[in-house]
Amino acid sequence: MTRVVDAPPAVALRLPSWAPYVAAGLALTGLGATSLWTASHLVPDRTLHDAALFVHLACLVVGFGAVLTVDWVALLWVAGRCDLGHVLRQAGVVHVPIWGGFIGLVLSGTLLEPDVTNPITHAKLALVLLIGWNGLLAMWLHARLSEDPGRFRLGISALTASISQGGWWGAMAIGFLNAN
Image 1: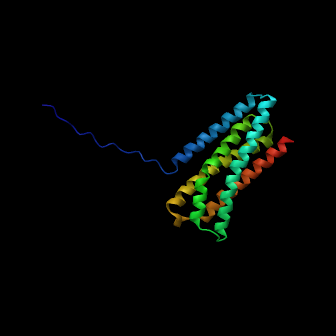
Image 2: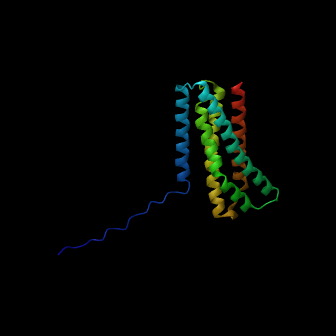
């Protein structure tokens, strides 16, 4: 007679709510490092450079335009002109344009022949990485606020928005100055 032994129940691995965001942050860092390495080894011809510049500017309009939209609606909320739910809905519908613009900027920037030996370029690249990490923090915050809007923390939201604005405007200014 064969005896059947019940196996112990499988233990479900439950990751913390922030774990996917940390993994995405590592992926963004890898994307940045890969783009930096590629930019230092690639010399595009004039046509490819011009096409990359067009894509770069288009991605700036799409990505930063979506960020400005969310931040504007958030300012309206702070001023009492709309509710937090409206801000969360607005932020929820523009994740794709923000991230599409951001990733498009990183990839097209690789073809714009950045001077990777210039300290001001290092500052821009640091701002771009900060923007990406901050965007992940903003997505995590959005998820938490969508679950429980009563736990709203103005401080972390204001800090996230300030880092975002400072990063985008700073990277854009450095890009403009480096182009001349």
